Image (cartoon, rainbow, N blue to C red; front, side, top):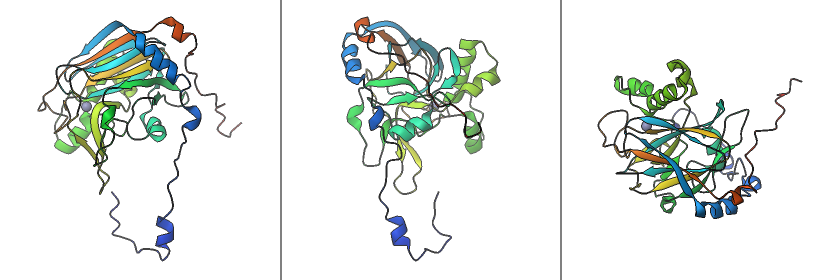
Length: 287
Ligand SMILES: [Zn+2]
């Protein structure tokens, strides 16, 4: 935290601290040209599969390019931690930090989930969000953040001294072990910073610390995505429940989450191609 207690102010402080903000990455040039088409396509969705995520656990799901998937609240308010991979190459995974740099602290309709370097392409586009009415509240809070990481047993141990095994980090790891039949250590390395689905978070106005409030999600609410390549998803139903009080423990009331996979009429897909990985030549100035 910046306490501003140690150094003297420079004489030209007024000039130095009064610059106007400039958006780091303008997204005007790569707004989704298929967005209107996706909105049309989602009018004829047909459910083809669904997976229930038990509380304090995670499950995997697969979505082929051209299908949609929804993460849905069932039974009660519950936060979900989402990891996304390219189905055939787990090295290509969701890049929370870059998605944040492009779209801001919280994602909603029209925003894309970008993948890690050297791929950097859209894995999925958000096509519907039943919580988009929330916007940003007076504390700067909103839903579906890309500013948190995922609850994990290491930070829990650091802060409380406890060994807790059902944090989202561990839930995601176990789900990957079961899906890919791989070593625990290899699975853990694949787990990455998440999209915090339904979680209500922000940075405090004074100290800029990460905060959470009880999620406004209710039964039947959902966040919907269009798969821009073949995907492996992993979703954890966070042990924090609605994340209004605490996580990394068994104290919060937790509920299941539902992931459903939907197909659409192929007439829409003729005009939509899978997203392509970055064409940067990867010389990095050496060749
Ligand atoms: Zn969690």
